[in-house]
Image (cartoon, rainbow over all chains, first blue to last red; front, side, top):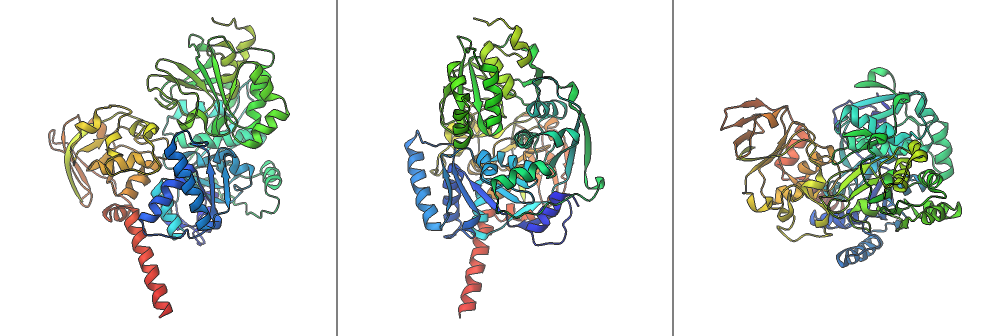
Length: 423
Length: 175
C-alpha cells in the first residue's frame, strides 16, 4: 500500500484499503474558512442537523472576506461567531492569516494526519506527509452532522526530482514546469508525491509550495514522505503532538513514476489564462506590469518576503507599477516587520494589505481594471480572478514577481541587474 | 436515470471561477439566485438562454480549480439535466454528486457534440447518444456509491436519513 492508502485505512478503522475503493473516514482536523463556516452551518441546519459531531476537530479561520467590506459578510461572520459558541468550537483564528498558512504554523498539520477543508488549496498541508483535501460545503456539512465522509482511495503518481537549481529558480518554477509538461489535469483525482534527492534538500516552505500547486494539476492531495526536516518543523510547531509516519511498501504502489531533472528549469511564468501555458520569464519583457500581487497561500510565507526584499532593497517599483502585499499570516507579518522586510518593500513603493487571501479571494483590495496586466506569486491565472475578466494574470515565483515589479515588465530575477526600466 | 436535453458546449479546462464568478458569492442564497449567475464568467446572457433539462457538454478537466459548490449547485438549480465531459475537476465532481446533479464522464464526447444537439443519456443502461448525429458511446461504470447519492437527490437527503436512523436508534435505546 502507498502511505496515503495507509492514512485512509487508519482513518477508516481498517487494516487495509484498495485503490479505487470508497470508504468512510473521520479526519483529524477540518478547516472551515469564513465562507465555508457560514455555508456549511446553513446546510447543516437544512440537513436537519443541530449539533456538530466532533467540535474538537473543527478549526475555523476568517481569511477570505475578513475584515468584511460587504455588510452581508459582517452579518454572516457575526452569525458564525455565535454558531461557534453554540457548538463548542474553540479553535478559532479570525484574521490571523490564510488557513493554509496557519495550519502548518499552528501545528494542525502533521505526518499521518487526515485533513479536510472548505477550500481547494487545503492540499498545501500534505507537504508535511499527511492527506489533505478540499471539499464543497455540502460535503463538509454532511461530515459536521455525521462525523465522517467518504473518500475514494487514490492512485498515486510520484515525481522524482533531482539536479541542482539554476540561480533564482525555486519550487514554484518546478510546479509551473510540471503544468507545462503535463497540463492542468496532470493528475486528475490522484495523489501526487514529490520525492528524490532535490526534495530532501527543500525546506518546508518550498515543499508547501509544491503541494499547494497539486490542486491545479487536478489532484486530490499531495504527499512528501516525512523526514528529519518535517520532524523538526512539526516538533517546533506542536511539541505535544504524537504522530505516525506511514511509509509506502514498494514502487509497485505507484500508478506512475516520473523523473524530473530540475537543472534545466529557468524562471517560468504561466501566461493568461491557462496555468499550463508556460513561458520563460526572460522572453516576456514586452509584457508591461501594472500590478504585482504578492502573498496568498502559495507565496505569502516569510521565506517569500525574504526573497522579495533582497531583490527590492534599495530599488523602487517602476513608476507605472503598483505592488499589493498581503502577508500570509499575522506571524509572517510580524516576523517580516522584525526583519525589516516590510520596511524594505514599502520603501520600494509596495502597498501592504491585511493578512489574508488578498486580491486572490476576490474580496480584498487590489482589483484589476480591464486590459491591465498583473504578475503574482499566487497559484492561479484564471480569467477574472483578480477583478476584471478583461485583465491578464501572469503566475510566477516570488523572486520573479519582485523583480518584475521593479522592472515594470516581466523579467527573470537574474536579468534584473542588467535591465533598463521601461517608462 | 434517463436524461434527454439540448446541449451547450464548452472548451477544455473550464474552471469554477468561470462557471460561478466569486463576485456573486453570498453567505446565503435566495431560491433561483445561484442559477441567475451560472456561467456568467463566459457568457453574461447564458442564464437567460437556458431551458430546464438542457445538458452541459464540456471539454477535458471541466470544473477544475476552486472548491466553490455554487458551480454545481447553480447548475442543479437551473434545471440542468446532466453535465458531460471527458474528465472533470475532482472537487467539482464531488459537488455535483452531492447536489444530485448527474455528472457523466464520456471520453472524447466534446468531439462528438455541437451546440444545440439533442443528447440522450441513460445512467442505468450506461450509454450516451447524440440524437442529431447518431453518435453513441458506452459510459464507463460509475461507482455505485456515487450513483446512489445522485439518485437519492444528493448528500443532504443521505445525511437526513442517517440522522433520522440515529435518532430512532437512540430513542429505542432510551425506551
